[in-house]
Amino acid sequence: MAESQMLEGKVVAVTGAGRGIGREIALLCAKEGAAVVVNDLGASAEGEGNDAGPAEEVVSIIRNAGGKAIVNGASVADPQGATSIIEDAVKAFGRVDGVVNNAGILRDRIFHRLSEVDWRQVIDVHLNGAFLVSKAAAPYFKDQGSGSFVHFTSTSGLIGNFGQANYSAAKMGIVGLSNSIALDMQKFGVRSNCIAPFAWSRLIATIPAETEAEKLRVERMKTMSADKIAPMVAALLSDAASDVTGQIFGVRKNEIFVFSRPRPIKTMHRSEGWTVESIAEELIPAMKPVFGPLERSADIWPYDPV
Image 1 (cartoon, rainbow, N blue to C red):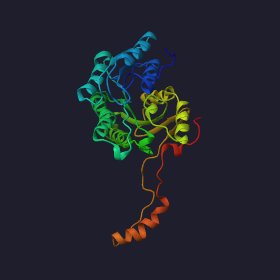
Image 2: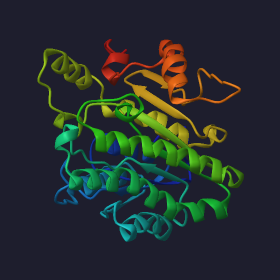
Image 3: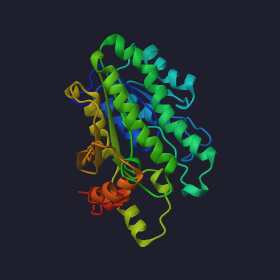
Image 4: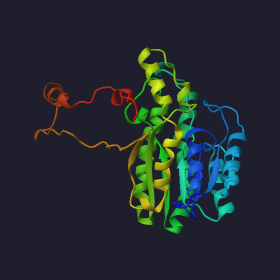
C-alpha cells in the first residue's frame, strides 16, 4: 500500500467499478487507504445481463495488495439495490465517507429513432441511479457531519453530441442533482462535485465512427486511459478538498479543467414590456451576436490530449 495515503480510514462506494474508469477509481482509492465497496452489475455496455466476475477480480486485486474491499452486484437503477450498496459499506466497514456515481450504459440512437425504452433505461441507470445511491448515503453523511459525492457527467451533455439525447439529458440532469445536493447539504459538511471524463472505455467503443473526423476522434480517445481519471476522484474524496463543492471538472489525459456554469451573458429590457413583434424585431437581432453555436465536444477539443 502507498506510504502517503490520502484516504486513510475512509470508506468509499464506487458504482460501475468492475471495468474501465470505475475499476481504476476503486483500485486507486484502495491504494490511498480507503476500504472500497466495488459495485458492478456486470452488464453489457447496453445494460443487458450480469456477471459478478469483473467486480470480484477488482476486489481480489485490492485484497492481495493488503487493502479492504467487498463486492456488491446490485443495479443502481433498483431502489433496493442502490440502498444495498451503502448498507453493505456500513455493515462491512462501519461507515461510509464517499460515493462515486460512475455506473452507466449507452443506448445511442439518432433522435427520431430513439425509443421510449432506450430513453428510460439510460435515464434510469445514470440519473435515477445517481439519485438513489446518493439518497441512501445522505442520512449517514448528515449524521456524521461529513461526506463527499463524486458524480460522473459528460461533455455530451455539457456541450453536445450526435445520437445521445438520452445520455446527454441524463448527464446534464446529474449536474443539476449534484448542485442541489451541494446546496442542500453544505450545512452538514457534505460536498458534491461532478467530473466529465475523457477516457477510452467499452462504452466509448460502442459509439459509431463513420467519417474520417469521427475515426480520428476515436483514435485520439484511445490514447486517454481510464487511470488518468482516478486521481481527481480520489482527491475530491479526500479531506484536502473539504471546501470544494458544487463544481464541474473535466479530466483529459494530463489536463484537468473546471467548467463554467450557465449564467446570464446579456440582458435587455423595455419599460413598457415586450411584444411578439418587438422580440422579433429588436431582441433577437440584438442578442444574436452572443448566441452560442451548435457544437460537439470534438469542436471544443480538436487537438490531441496532452
